[in-house]
Structures are given as C-alpha cells and as structure tokens.
Image 1 (tube, helix red, strand yellow):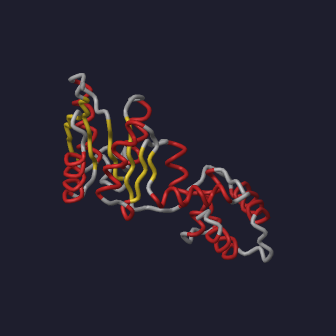
Image 2 (spheres, rainbow, N blue to C red):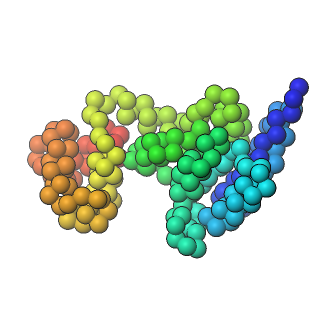
Image 3 (cartoon, one colour):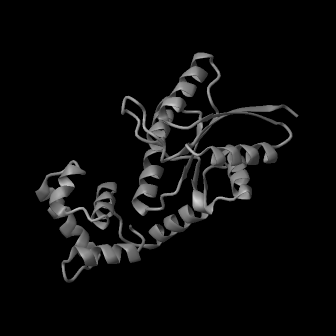
Amino acid sequence: MKTQELKILMVDDHPMIIEGYMHTLMASKKENQSLTIDIASDCDSALKAMKKAKSIGVPYNIYFFDISIPESSDGLYKSGEDLAKRVRMVEEDAKIVILTMFDEVYRIHDIIKTINPEGFLIKSDLTSSELASAFQAIQNNPPFYSGTINKILRKSLQNPITLDLVNHKMLHLLSLGVKTKDLVKHLDLTLSAIEKRKKNIKELFFVEDGKDETLIKIAKEKGYI
C-alpha cells in the first residue's frame, strides 16, 4: 500500500491543546499515513511557517486554525480566520479545519460562506474520537462539521426566513448592544440604509411592537443569532 505523506500546520496559542491534537492524530492515523506536524501560536509564526514551506516546494496539505490567536505584527492578519482566507486564496489544494469556541450563528454562516472549510469544529464539542474522525473525513468525504455546527445549520434550514450576511451581522451587532446610530461604524452602509434594512427585518420576523429588544428575542428563538 502506497504511503500517504501529509504535511500539517496546527495554529493555536494554547500549547496543551496543540499537544492534545498532535497526540490524537498520531495515535489514530492509518498505517499507510505518514504525518509531519508543524505548530504555530500566532499569526506571525504561522505566516513564517507557510512561507518556509512554500519556499522549499513542500506546501502543507492540511491546516488547523484556531480563530482566536494573536494578530500579525503588521496588523494585516487579525485571527486564524484571516489566515484561513489567505490559504483559500493561494493554496487551492490545501484542506482547512477551523476550530473555535464561538458558536454565534452569524459567525458560523460567515465562515462557511467565505472559507468553506473542509472541517469546522466547535471546541466544546471536541473529543479525541471526533477529532480523529474529522481528520479522516476531511481527506475522503469533506466537509466534517461538529454537532453544534450541524445543529445550527439544520435549524437555519428549517426556518423560512432568509437573511443575507449583512442582515445577519446587523442582528449580531444589535444583540451585542450596539446602537443603531453606531452600526455605520461596523457596516458599509448609510444610517438610512441601515434603518431600512432593520425595518424590513422586523417585518420578516413579525415584530409587532417595533422594538429592537423584541426583534433580538425572536431572532434568538429562531436560531438567527
């Protein structure tokens, strides 16, 4: 049987978590798989490893990105999500696994739309057996989503209301307490456009009293936030 050589970069700023991931993959790999695993703890060290791999002509096959890692020194890369987007643009054959503690509906939909990772795992769901299953699945039958991701996607499919990413983000920001007049700082929209969108969303959710609090409550109940 031909040996499958896989080069992996794991990016997480918690050494114990990285060690656990590495142990799981090494312990669960198939007999014909040979794994080379490099690690990085922030955007700068990850970029350095990626550039080195490219320079020697042996790029990574699989990337594991934690979302919340220290940004790059030049400020161009704020998170593991930004690194994943870079990989998706320049390394079309590479497989990407996103790991995160975030379980907000908007963030999950945005990551799937912009990155479309082969693996998407919520850390609170993660067990050694699930990580091992995900590792094999992303190579043979991607994507692999953890339980919380699948639950959110199923709930979204069951709801008849469809929102674009801008409206999802607007709901997300309102739920965080951002005032309508301050949404212009976060969205590439004028205040009048924001007000119009918010009015339309309230009509979609049948918010009879017109209050933002009611909108947020209903959107949470329906799984949009």
